[in-house]
Length: 346
Image (tube, rainbow, N blue to C red):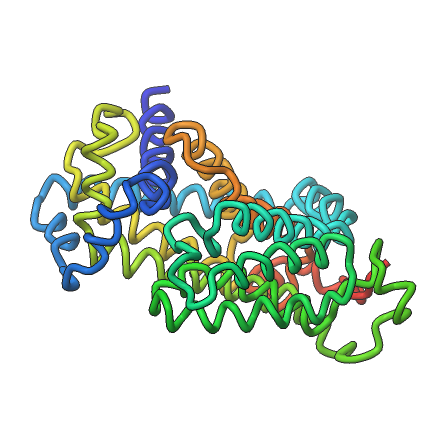
């Protein structure tokens, strides 16, 4: 029993580091504080956490515990129960695109309502024509929600996203998950429960490439996670350390190490691992479920704004129900090789 307790503590510590401590710093810290930290030169201070022998021991113990979890999940997936469970989930794959469609529409609506773009730290007033951007975001939101000229709305969103790179710099890459969805909507539109169905009929263009829809979303989502982990947590560790100290996270001894620097380093490393797992589709459903749990926990603890996280929920629900094709999981679990043309919309 004691060993089980230790294992669970290590397990929750590992994912807890990236769950609560990796709350989007821009949503937790004041606007000026966050951007002042981001404008500081890159620093490798986060890696100094490994100079402590105690921190190294904690890292090894947590890492071994997670490896054990992955092995257990592997054998559960190989069992008949695991295959039946995942086959049952995939029955609802046709709902996946709608999860993301609704999430994009709602996120863009509240983004425009708060006069920001993608997140509250990207003020819409910094654009050359802020009122035009705000009106465009409202229009894009409504058009995607009802499925009216979806491809045109998505193209307008892509244009604004590219424009934002010149306004806010490479930091916008932390929101590549938006770009992935906009690209998919631009290429394939929305022909289910939409006005476009009656205007244009079934989708005809790019039908061959529609099977890569989930891949586009998954890869850009993973890249966004990795980029945010590296640029914010690992190269600007003072920002995350400030979050840890401000919210007294180290008081939760069962969940966090006592060293704020190790919490910061762990958050960056684990978020990178989660991003890579999603990019390559390795233990993906387990990874997505754990990330969803801690996203929700982070929202409740830090009382962050909900709307910037809506797209994360939409993408996560989509990845949960889609068959794991073009993934490492597909190679590991033979039952998925029998998957048929899952990309065909109902």
